[in-house]
View 1 (tube, one colour):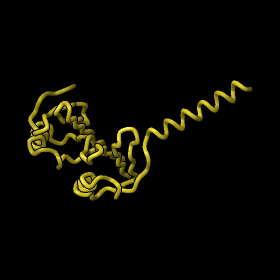
View 2 (cartoon, one colour):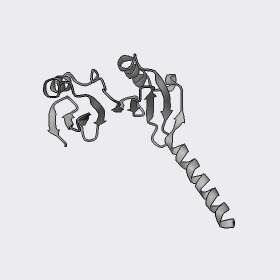
View 3 (cartoon, one colour):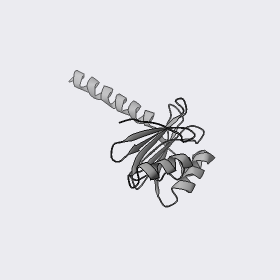
View 4 (spheres, one colour):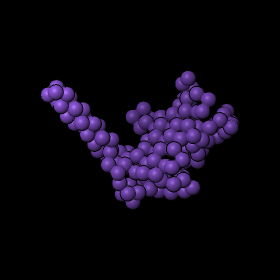
Length: 143
């Protein structure tokens, strides 16, 4: 019986740690101004379901009722956008043109921006992944 109690308490402690690492719910107005502007400019027709601040790295996650998610760094710059049929209106024009010309009609389901690697990766609904530099120049396909 003592082993069971120790195990149960250990599991409860681990669950508590895991929950704390996920983040703390915050109000939309507590996001950095850049993140608020990005949301109002690009998601004006979507309803925000929740906003969290990650405690380990001070990043922010914004979840929408339509299932989309946008991740921001501590300064409010977007890092990642996930959803079904993401608008690419905020991407550099060169990327928008490339996607319209080469992949017309294919939905974008994820966009990841990596400042260290100096690239933006687009994942399409058909499984294709395309990498661009931060200026929007095509780099390569990643299948």
